[in-house]
Length: 405
Image (cartoon, rainbow, N blue to C red):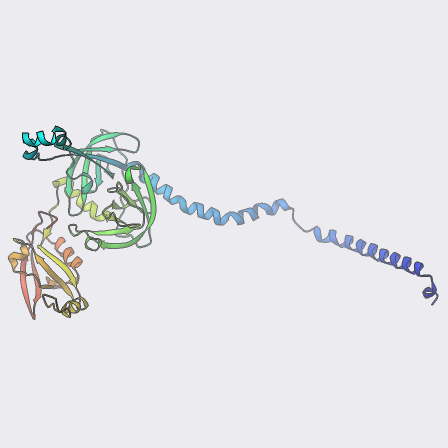
């Protein structure tokens, strides 16, 4: 009670003193606890490397996963070549331009603007498949060329001699004589390729030498008919790796650096889509081209279309349709080539091919493959439906002379 009677100033002073005393007491208690908690902690330098390694692991993994492209290209790069071609075309001079009256009226300069000869230059790619100097490329790269020059990545240049061309499969073999061993591209197998596999295209697109593009295998067995090339007999590997003019004939690699296909730039309007000839097909053709200079392809001589019941029904319901088609699965004969095996056997326009040698035929691609796999002169038993009746016809295959027919 006496404390309450103290003056106001003394009461305030005693309050401050009490607060300071409590603060000092708490500080001392804290200092006694902190050292015991800090002692077990390991030094900072011990943990730092582990923390850095854990934080960098995703980036390190991404970098190492992309290095397979470098390894693949290094494995095959020195065997990829550039192919330059020259071709001279001769124009027939119009006698009208040689007429003195014409030259007097228009002047001599007009006729001089039309040179009788013109030199065309081409560019493509290829790759060495044998140490002796065998180079694989596309047929359209070297077809009708008067001069073929093969240039290696190390700068060496050789004159090439075309040993064989097959327009049907767009494949060609060129020989160069070097007198020494050459780098050889490792050939893989296209049979084991799956959709989604890595695809690496190497070549000289648009004249830019030693260019590499990366993508994946988009689909397999894309037929030449689906691509819009009716004069070829191929099932392509489709990829989204960039393939442009100049890439033609260069290798398409898998992730291990093995050749799984031959790039071919055949669709100028195919933005973001490339096509390659499977290497297993190319290996079989290369041996024949080296030995015989050409490949004999059997043919029937029909232009055909895959027929389905839906497609036939659509045709039959059209009042302007000139023909009624059986609403079945098969191959519709749109045209029969004159003097062909099909014409000799009695196949007619409008027939529907149902079977070959007892095997059901449901698509034009399937029929084309059956014929391609047959022998020259082999007799095929072809079952066709003509109107409401079926007939069995015997067709003897012959050698295809012109791919466009």
